[in-house]
Length: 304
Image 1 (cartoon, one colour):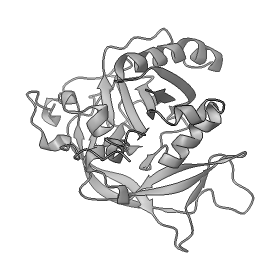
Image 2: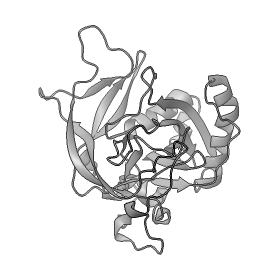
Image 3: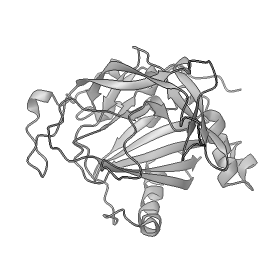
């Protein structure tokens, strides 16, 4: 087994020549004429609370069987300082913090209403983006996407629960599931799962996405949760509250900006911090009547 490298310095302990945007300088507005919420805030985040009976936690992806709760674990709400990434983006990268920011990214897809067009137009853009920006990447497989809308009848809404989409076991299972004929060879090399997240109706005013600096997250904070599909069972990670965790959001994200979220990394030199807890949250300074957030996240297996 490869000896793990020293744990990186958490980003909040690094200096930067670019000051963060303060709440007092929040003078920009969206198309509604409402001020875009910016600056560090204290927000309530939903963390993991273990099942009362001590059983293994689970969550049904689709409708659960009759008489069975959709999930058997609870929520532990904690007040957390969430710092603004805006103006200090250069402090963070995929290797040390498990997330990164990208700006000025164009797309030929604007509606995000038809599955066929998303796969034909947007998927190739995301694949190229990952190959161009992720160090060492030489092959990308996009295996699914989720569109979230803050409307009453939306199929998927923003998730206000701290989580990580994959665990080491479920990441390897993803490779075997999607590339069964090549899996054993691919699993011998480096493979990562990376989500590409962007708003569809930016700038984001409500339910922004918060991420934890992975260098401040302990393995003991993470709990595997059975992710039950109709035809198989995967695994996600719930996250326990720990005051040592440092949280961030990118205020007022636009349609030309991307957050890269690394959910797993097989490279043992960065694997201990190769996963980023994340959650939507209620920004206390979101103005009344602000447009609800719409977003798309594309999940990718990245090899090399």
